[in-house]
Amino acid sequence: GVPDFNDLVGVVDFIHRRITYDNEPVLVHCLAGLGRTGVILACYLVKYQNLSADEATQKVREERPGSIQSYPQEEIIFRFETILELILLQAFHLQF
Image 1: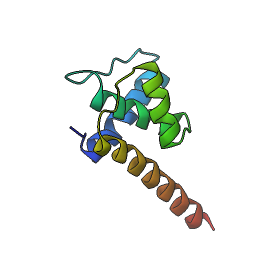
Image 2: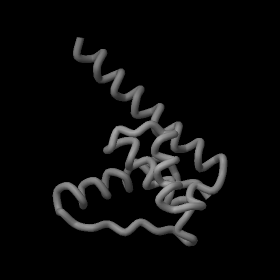
Image 3: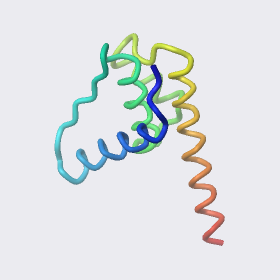
Image 4: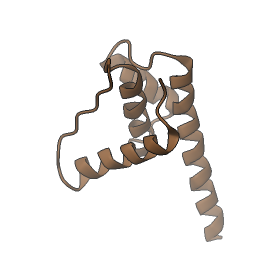
């Protein structure tokens, strides 16, 4: 399966808050611990570690072979990256 996009954004931000502000470890796991888990972790790396979608996907797969199991899961990571870039671009243009 593929996480709902709005849920994905919320979960990624929740993980960041727990790690950054609460200094708490975070466990991410779906039914098998591969597909949706990998998507969430890759999106976290895209947003908060400034990795490209491709780099994040590769890193997650290196750490946990078999992660991000399907094309739709890969696609949502790339869409996540694209939407973040558009939001940043729009914010940049609003400043000028």
